[in-house]
Image (cartoon, rainbow, N blue to C red; front, side):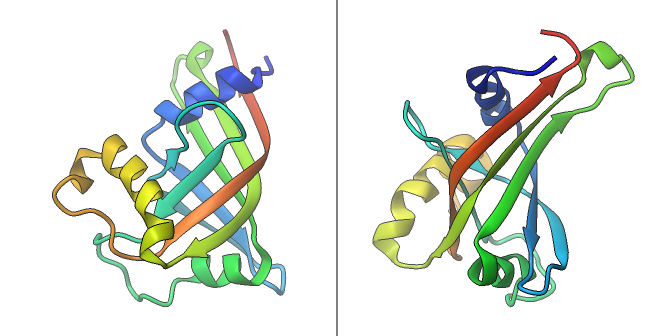
Length: 143
């Protein structure tokens, strides 16, 4: 059954990980898992994630290059279970931008620190991606 926007955002907000889909200027898709937070409160939702201290192959990340090139992103959170009545997914589509200035990064980093205890002693130091959510879609097997 289709979820209301409120129910979809509530499920998404509670999820611990999402998959970020970006596309290059040439149309090549790229999907990676990310930790994320949603803006608190009411109003138009904003999703954020940051480049943190977890080991990466390179600092020249394709996800950031794709965002700079096209701004188009989707985030997908879901729950799978062998008990299919527990299945659900939520997708957020939006326009993203990369934030590097300390004053722009402060609020999004605080949202991430609030959500993830792992960040409390070591907050993300890298770029933050700000996603202005333009569309919310969600489905659940059952209410």
